Length: 237
Image: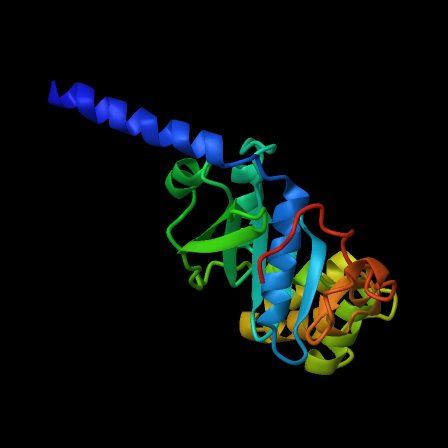
């Protein structure tokens, strides 16, 4: 009898959640996350949307004194690609956080390593999206020098090599050759510092990114940063 009561209570809670929570889209979660990260940003930090990392593309990357990755999984997404994505992300980012909903909370907690942060998104009574930190992200120290060097464009890689190692390569060295040289001969901490400097200053990224101090109230009018479209739902400040 006791187990039947527990089962009834359990399903009663689930039913109450289903009635009170509307499914959240990727856009709704992204809008709330952009506001949260920009509001907490410090000077010279840049929030980059859709940064390519190997064969994957992270939803949001925060370039500050470290490189932080944020992956969004909404109620309309699946976790099918997450295993492949997370291995690509481990090789580059200092910290990683998944931002999802209660629908996937148990699954991502079981799937992801303990150093991944887990944030949960929901709506308040007036339809504003809120973000709750279920587990904070921690540095994992598993970056790969070659994967980090692969973030550099050819001209950036050549400048890095000549700045650190001198004129040890021919002017027409390929991007792959330069990246291999960087990974082999430059300490990973030095590579990490250079990557952060490059991402914060790369103009094509800044043109579609969010810099600290931006006014996010009228993001639909912000043509300089290419900010995300007007939120479909209100965002809790």
